[in-house]
Amino acid sequence: MFESTLEKPKSLWLDAFGRLAKDKVALLSLLIIVAYFIAAILAALGILGGTWEQEVGPSYHPPSREFWFGTDIFGRDVLQKVFQGIKVAVSVGFVSAMISIPIGIFLGALAGYFGGIIDEIIVWFYTTVSSIPRIMLLMGISLIMGKGLFAVYWALGLTTWVTLCRLIRGEVIKHKEREYVQAAGAIGGGHLRKLFRHILPNVMHIVIIQFSLQFQLAIKSEVILSYLGIGVQGMPSWGTMIDDAKLELARGVWWQLAGATLFMFGIVLAFNILGDALRDALDPKLKGK
Amino acid sequence: MGIHIYILRRLLYIIPLILGVCLIIFLLFNVMAGDPTHLLLGKHATVEQVRELRAELGIDRPWFIQYFDLVKSSFTFNFGRSWSTKQQISSMIFQGIGPSLTLTVPAFTLGTIISIILSLFVAFYRGKFLDKMIVFICVAMMSISSLVYILFGQWAFAFKLGWFEISGYENGFPDCIAYIILPIIIWIMLTLGPDVRFYRTVMLDEIFQDYVRTARAKGLSEPVILFKHVLKNALIPIITYVVISIPFLILGALLLESFFSIPGLGGIVLKALNSNDFPVLRAMSILTSVLVILFNLVSDILYTIVDPRVRLQ
Image (cartoon, rainbow over all chains, first blue to last red; front, side, top):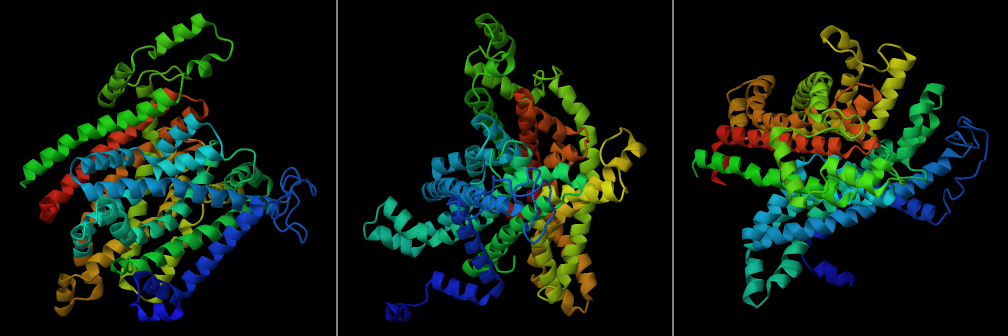
C-alpha cells in the first residue's frame, strides 16, 4: 500500500496534508481539537466530570489545590462543570454542522449543476434566509421548538447553511463545464454520477473549511443563546456558567467565568487557526486572506 | 446589459425577497408556533374566551389573509399591538430607535475608522512578524465570547474602578454620554478582531495590483502609496461593507443594551423574547429584514455605478 501511494502523483489531499504538517501551529491546533473531542466523549460516558452534581465543598470556595477552579454557589466543583461543558459545546458544534452541511451541499450542488429555474429558486431561497438577521431567526426557531439543547442544535443547523450553499454552488458551476466532467458524460455517465462521483469530491475541501469555521461559530452562539434564556437547560454549559457569572462577579467570584472562558477560548481559537490553515492548504488561491 | 436595466431588475427582485421573508416569518410565528391563546389565557380558559381572543388577535381568519396582512405590514410598518404592553408596536420601535442609534452609530463609526487605520498599518508590515502578531491577536480576540467582554468590562471599569455608569440611560445629547461611553468601548473591542482581519484582506487585495507597482516605480513613499492609492481603491469594498452593516446598527446591540439597561430596540427584542410577545418579535424580524434587503440593494447599485465590470455578469 505504501508503494502505490508513492507511485501516484501527489493528490490534492496529500499535498494539502504535507503543507498543513509543516505548519506547527496548525498541527498543534488539530491536536488540541482532538483532545477536546476525547474529553467530550469521556464526559458523555461520565468518566470526566460525571460527578458534577455532587456537593464537594463549601459554597463559592476560591480556587485551591483541591478545586482548581473553585466551587459554585451549591459547592459543586467548577472544573467538573467545565468538563461537562466540553460535552455540550462539542455536541452543539458537531450536531448543528451535521444538520447544516448536508443542506448546504444538497441545495448548492442542485442549484449549481442544474441551473435554470432550480437555480433561481434556490438562490431566491438562500437570499431570503440570509436577509433575516440570524439572531432573529435563532430566536424564532428556539421559541417554536421550546428551550433546550435540541432546539439549539436545530436553530444553529438551520441558520448556518447559507454560506456553504453559496460557495458550493459557485464551485459546481465552475466545475461542470470542465473537461473531466464532459468526459464522464461522454462515456455515458448520468447526472447523478457526474455530480456525486466527479464534481462533489472536487469541491469537498470547501466543506472541510466551512465545518471548521462553523464549529466555532456554533460554540460561540450556544453561549449567547444560553444567556438569552433559550439555550441549554438543566445541565452545565459554558453559556450557563458565563451567565451565572453576571451575578457572581459583583461578589468577587470570578473563577466560574474564568474556567468557562479559558476552556472555550482553547477550542474556539484552535478551530479558528485550523480553519485558516486548512483554507491556505486546500485552497492555495486564497492564501493569505 | 445596460446599467438601467440592471438596476431595474435588481429593484424588482426585492419583491420576491420581501414575500419570501414574510413567508418564513409567517411560517415560524403563525403556523409552527401553534395557538397562542394557551400562552395568553392559561390552562383554565373557557371556550368562549378562547374564541373571543382568537377573533381579537385575528388568528381565526384564513391563513392567506393573515399572510397578506404580514406582507402589508412590511410596507406600512403598521404592526398592530404588543401582547404584553398593549402599546402600538410602531410607536415602541419609534421610541427605541433613538437610544439604539445613539449607541451604535458612534461605536460603529469609531470602530470602522480604527480598524481601517490598523489594517493599513498591518498591510504596511505584511508578512513580517508584526503583521502575523496582530492577525493572531485578532483571531484570539475573536475566540473569546462577547459576553465575557461585556461582563468583564462592566465589572472592571464601572463596578470596580467606577469610571463609568454601571447601567442606565438618559435621553438627550449631553446627558446620554456618560452612559454610552463604556458600551461604545466594548463594542469597538468586540468588532476590532473581525474588522481588522477583513480590512487587511481588502488592503492586501489592492497592494499587489499593477498600479501600486507603478506608484512604487515612480518613487513614491510607502505611506503615500498606502493612503493615497491603496486606500482610495479599497474604498469600494469598504463602503459596501459599511452600507450592509447599517441595518444591524438599527437592530441595536442586543447584548450591550441588555447589560447596560439602554432602552433601545435590542432591549425591546429581548423583553419580547422573555414574555413570548410574538407580534413584537415578528415586527422586529420584518423590519430588520426589510432594511437588510434595502441596504443590500443600495450597496449593489453603488457597486455597479462605481465598478462597471460588475454589470457584465
